[in-house]
Image 1: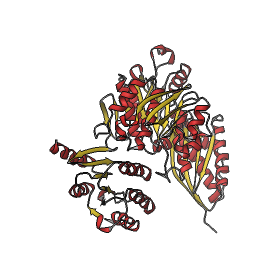
Image 2: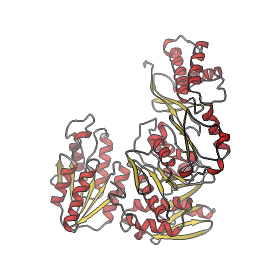
Image 3: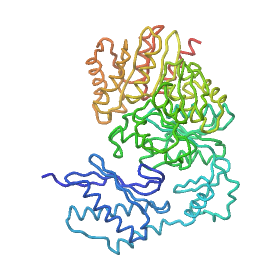
Image 4: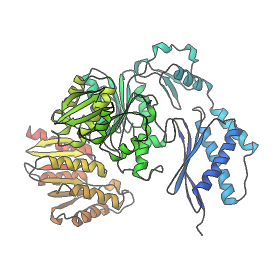
Length: 570
């Protein structure tokens, strides 16, 4: 008989719209063996409901999500009692453990209710709730965190400390505005999309703010570097006085960990969804990941644009369950989804005869020739055609006119300065080197397709991988690389990313897979680091060759080396 094991893996606040609903609350993720998941859910729900009723939180909701080996148990809560809500959730869990493991039900006692009520009272902030309600009534955007609360975005934004919030009737609500805000998520293309969109906004004379996994920027000023793809980055950007419109990169991890930081966006774009980061937060399958990415739709109402990739089967399937106003985009004018959507009066973006069109209200407008979009490398980079179409639809939803969309798309090139680590092209001595951060199979397939579409005498691929990636995933990455039939394969160790593996274990694994897939062992070069790998690639290269440099680390040093080659050749 299997032993019953129950473990609380994580307990945290949900500060905004999330996988379960648009409300804030608390969640615990648990793992279990030797017991039926339904028994856990029933007992927890009964106990947490009894606690909530005892605290006169009878209007708060509960829900659960069962996945392979685990369950998420969730409650809603007021935004001024989220820490207390985690204690409530954990208390119900502990009582449930006593029932199941100790077979000695303790029940919800008056002492427990008093203790939890005290936690609620200590955290309670009535002025915060009053301001939240007033902002809702005035249809004004509202943001809060542990330290500050704000109403409005951009130059009209008012920010208050959480312990110094004024009465709502003392605020001049007519002087406060919200600005256009777009949320961008997906497995690949998020950073490129927000940067390309900001170039369009700049062409229109707007000071656009962007958040990304690399930095937070307003206009041409980088406020800080680092990963700002979560709610904290969004708050910082939207409270900045110079932000006139915003494009926010929204990562899956932040949405699952805390929820969305913004609940009143103008438009949302989902670039694509692929099998990456599975196994985290109970997201174990591609369909789970699709649902997780679509959390962003909770930041808009049903009359605002939800922009979706019509060439992504998972997105197309999930969209069938939605009532949102969808704008589809596709490489193909004859995509059945595009055709049916346009026929039913919907909006769409597509490519026809080498030109990107935007269709709305029965009229198709030519926006720009694909070959004019700098980041598509004359159409070779098909994934960036997708990104460009997403930007066309997104910027149209933000009220930017076609002439500025054209100007922005044609002027933005994927240089290390504009778009670090995303298809950066270096040309010298007749050699073309492309540096990209592609770290998953979906992204690598796009880059392999790109170099396969470009004329070349020979092709070289440089690759490496972190040690915490599974053997199967690494095999898939090698398989993607082999689609280019490379004339040379440079495999690099990343000593700082061994993550439990032996030194050179990953390079040997990559080499073994490549050989098994038909790569000549004499065309494989092993190096101690990505930078050393680039040096070897440059020694190998001749005029007419293309080098695909998949730089997971040492990007700055690699870019400096390649830039020096350009400077030497003029």
